[in-house]
Image 1 (cartoon, rainbow, N blue to C red):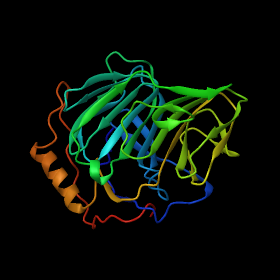
Image 2: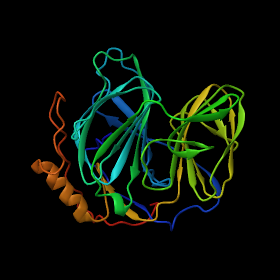
Image 3: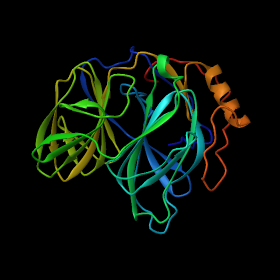
Image 4: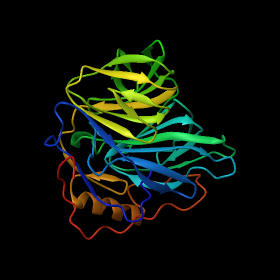
Length: 321
């Protein structure tokens, strides 16, 4: 997934100085961003007051959108460095292409996991024909310094492990939760899970006290540790929890995101995650010159041009503004 802002603001994030080391209930409101011609997303991370949750550095929630008479998602080829992208759908399908030669249609509850490493380019689009509704989330995971120059790769996992309780089904995207471990490749202690709850369900989900967590509401209404969380919002939970109380006021879907607080300080600008302004400048120059990122074959349209760099200094700082 691309950040299609034509004037992207640099985000400085990472470092453990601003980790909330105890349980909290911090409700994050989204910022609405246009993604292509017909898709609007709700951006939860980076947020005005919260930049990361573990290694999770970027979260967009979109839909459900009625795209029966629309082109749907149309994101032209664009570059990434220093991160992994996670494609996750509740409705619809997305056709992924990338410069390693991958061509894959991703459907609901299937994991599309792309590791950019040193450099990759990819596109995402709704197939033709496509389902009427499109609903999902796009997420980025920051790579630690020792792995950010790894070879680019794409993984597709059509079946994922699950766990749960009466009225609760948990699908594990990344990492491990309640004994279920995802086959997706990870580079830091992290967890990502999709939770489907039926109305009236009350459950307690086991957590790692050393992880910080957040809950993204996808559909319905769930009370998370007593806080109502509605679709398109995210509840930041801090660290120090051994379990998470949940109560579904309706049939609902949420995503649990967590991980060990990310120790390194980062710069995130446009579709790049780096450590210095030089990292970002070089990636932008390489994309404009047509080097390093390879070619996405088969997409009907030109690649995205890189926006101008901001005049302000790009310096890594802490986890919040």
